[in-house]
Length: 170
Image (tube, rainbow, N blue to C red; front, side, top):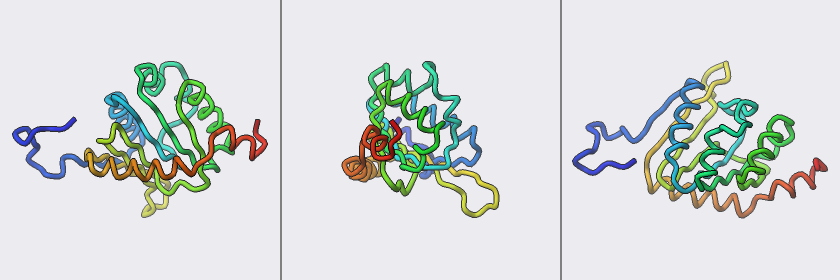
């Protein structure tokens, strides 16, 4: 949601939100996902904030969004698909309409919503315990630029079927 100049927030950084707690990250993701009107593009690598086994059901936000016509395209890092839980989840969403590609290396976890909202989820490297930091930025130019990067990876990635055939996972 973009505001007119008269509605603009007083703080010039209100278009950026940062959170570190896993439940908050998941809730923020779902809220932006529910607002999506056209597409959700994802570059996905470990670690994940969400528990994939809880997402594989007909009532997930992604399934209801896809039923509304939202296009989901995701590029997964290849190593993730060697984990049976991840593979089952990815196959489930692909069977429901998510377009899936696989790439050897995914450098960042990025979600792009309708060319206007971007969510980065980064592993916190400054603490001993594994934690995540998520940054949400409502910025059309940034989203459009990151979409070009996504499309570059998309065009060079392989399909899920090709990956399974190469790894003899059929």
